Length: 383
Image (cartoon, one colour):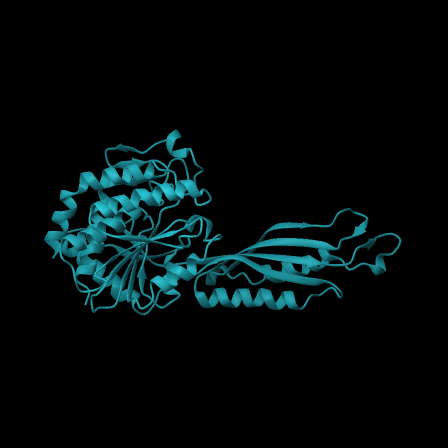
């Protein structure tokens, strides 16, 4: 089935590249509903032109999820193609610096993270459809709020529901130019610690006060002591505030904490430790409230991950491509939402390039088609 897939992708290179450019030139800021809606309509129209029906999940929220299915009645377990359409850039950026193709180099807002990746996921689905692939149901999931960590919608829960029962996942986040494939990513969380004390005049009645700042200092020292960089655990109290005047015992204080972890177990343990220390303040009379404002799961390397990578590497040999290597990386992605539900997943399957989230981001054009062929071929040879 390798030759039909590559034949299809080669025949549609111009069309797919044109669609990639159009998608980059459409702003998609997760906090702007109009730009999100326009992007979804653009993708829906493209898929409809190729005979695929789409559904908007979370259609009542500002950040719907676009879903397209292939082989819904197939007897095999589902496979997931995952990606996101939103970028970090404000509305108007695409007009200021639209997409440019200069030889191998593709630029423009989202040209690395990850408009081409979304197109590659679509191209994979279309290549399987046009070559009459029938072994497994294949579900395309494109979200619109990955860059804001799904703050405004139940996207995490929706992805879990949409991927239930899947046996493999393929996430099209951008890749470094080293031909690596991500088999594990760190997860992260943002935690607020708010301390409430008792205010008092520091000169007249200091004994009546309960210092929220002093309690916060204890909390910060204990929190940062949880860091173990060799094990991939980091707790960073990056924002601190408190008090109203030098001569008042402060009755309020706050820290914003970034938590990073390599595995789901580490993340659970770190958050439990922060909750435990918050429940037992050092300063008598002070109280501490802990709130996890957002969390994205680590992409754990599961028992089936190595076998999935091996199948991808075999496909590279069939396609006469350089054989990709597995790698661990620090940046979080939605692949963690799949591995959290025991779905072996490969990530970093998108366009090769660099400069994500900056004005100089870029992608390498040929990798769009090479990697779409690689994933399509891998799926075609799955048991």
